[in-house]
Amino acid sequence: MGFYEELSKYYDIVFEKNNATVEFLLEDLKKHQKVIDLACGSGTYSIELAKNKMKVLGIDLDLDMINLAKKKSNKLENVNFVCENMMNLKNIAKGEYNSIFCIGNSLVHITDRKAIKTLFKDIYDVLEPQGELIVQIINYDRIIKYNVDHLPTIKRDKEALEFIRKYDYNKEEDLVYFNSELIIGNEENHRYENTVTLLPLRKDELELMLLDIGFSHMEFYGGFNKIPYNDKAYATVVRAKKI
Image (cartoon, rainbow, N blue to C red; front, side, top):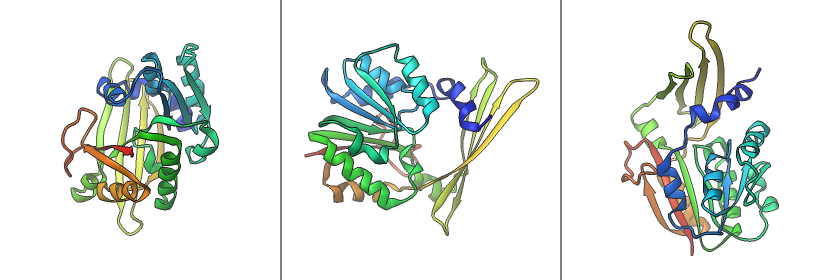
């Protein structure tokens, strides 16, 4: 069984819902506004926004994740999930949207800066005037400057589960090799390993990309709890407006 197929069974245990994230995503929204969740995973935040009366479209490339999201949505009429590549956004989205978000370090799975900028342009075109883009990634300024080679291991004692995350930055390639290991069970452990290549997108270049596309009124934070951004913060979070 493949790594992601196995991870999908435990996805919501590994990545628990964070209330601060929900509050951040809802902050500038009014009831019945239209939202897109790019790389929605199992749909946790799409569903939370739908419960708060938003009209939500969740997009993810992984069919197992989309099937899980549909199952979890419990037939909510104001949320829809599609298995698609977010690079095809302009072919998927119908009409204009009030908010589009891409969180969970998903953006940097796109390892081509030109492709990311194309995606930002498509997002800009799909947003209505005054619409917002929210992005959250790992703080790669911290990873590189301080030679961070791992993230905290996620442990769920009740389920006898560990998710180990290690980062290997290749300076010559300017890429990060994200090596993860899912360990399940106490006595007879089942181990599933995976390596994926990530783009170490720094805060300044992210800001320049967004400015170049036309976004403005950018707010940067070190997390969804709105701690100030600095090079020691765990995450890079930005809220950008289409004015």
